[in-house]
Length: 281
Image: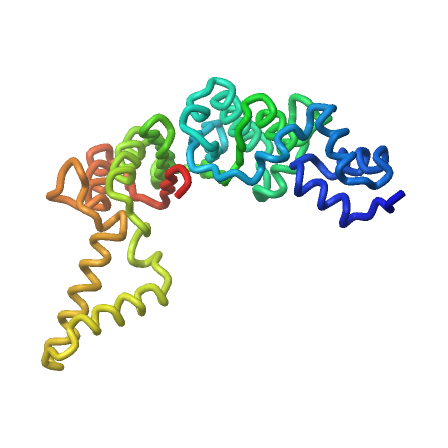
């Protein structure tokens, strides 16, 4: 009989995706033999996906759950687009998004280990393993995020390509969800990297300046700094959401468009945050 150690329990958990408590029970029953424990878990319907866990998952869907206090974003990956269109997979995505929205997990790791609210005998990760058993492909919960609905703000969500791309934009200004969604559509099309120049880490700007300086090497010193400043401004215009030309009216930037729309409503409105997720990216 092999001693059931924490390291052995962890190894079984890593190989099967089943929770630590269930792994310990299986190892105790198997007298410490990990292969026998796997068979026990498989017979119990908990680990039939063990050999599928390592397969690449480059398809899937991104789902948002909008509640009174939060917007929960979830990306779940599968091996094939065929499975991503499966109704059981779609229902699982909704279930996971609802769990995130209602339980507010601190991290993905914590979320995977918490009990499933509709069947507390299994964890979220065990629920995922059961879906692998049913569908026959590796399924991975890749990332989760909560956007809190702060007082005096609005969040707009835009889903594109059947859930393969999802964007969310948060505005300062209450009751402006449709305006936020319009900006979220812009985010989907224009792929900004940063909210504004002020939100870019100093080391990123320093690196861009170094690149620009290399590009203008050999220019007269008295005009070099002006050229570099111009290149940095062009970088801001391309990479920063508030500085990008609005896709539906390129006479204004996104920041100018939002402020203009706010003025027509007698409000002070501005973009304060965004998320852009694409499946497996």
